[in-house]
Length: 371
Image (tube, rainbow, N blue to C red):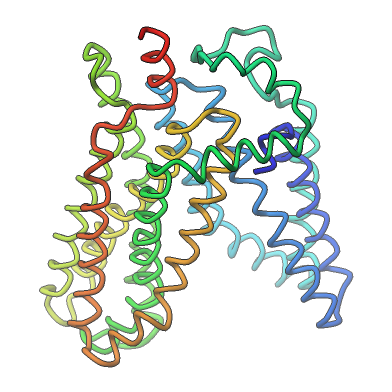
């Protein structure tokens, strides 16, 4: 929501500087209460980053190419999750645990400072034309003079009253339930049902999830961009709907991979790794594209609020992979687990159907102008 009233450049740069400073502070702290306070503060500040990035991407890249760059942005979490244990582990081993925390923080401080002076909120700030001409309603000029509080209220109202955004949020709930259900439960599944020799061996097999997800998330953006470029000649084609169709295709594939995982022979670790990598491929594509669809459905000023709502609901989905999914597994065994996961895919497909030809905010404004 802050993006409706504040510069995404400042949000991203100052947020990175603040969270990096907290990381450095961790190295000088040993008390559990200080750690708890800093950890909570760090989590809150980090929530600023994703909406700021989403606003910048929608302003700097047109719909025909945005999916590709959105995908590249999303794989940063995969790369960071892969590299950080290696870098931090090396620093902690050779220089002490404090440097395992402080060195990444110092790097973040430097990166945040560079962003503060090198980044621009939108192309117009550097003399370039906007990537997409948006025809705002007649009251748009007056709204530009609103206070920050009024801008936040308008942005929140637009998102909260958008039924399409809520549909996407519900889909996000189930996507994150599936994702967290895989990351939290697959190791136990391999140990109990598929003959993994120990937890370490099971963890290696499950590592395919992130690697497959990296490829799936990147490719989904490229595919959706190609679909949008192919639809340019059809004025009735909803550009957001084109991305939604890619999400639906990935979701159908996810059902197939879940069914295949049940059939993989016990002890076939290499085959299990490949199937789990395919599972990650089918999960991370929708995870990436749904956020992009949410950004394109509403006005540029409300992108931050949209990402906030989607993020909130997605965390609820991740939480549902805990006790609720454990109830299914304990009561009905692994068949219950897979039934719940496949059921989440089916519900997602049903929720996506009304959005299969949804038009973007830019398209809707152009249609209104033509009328």
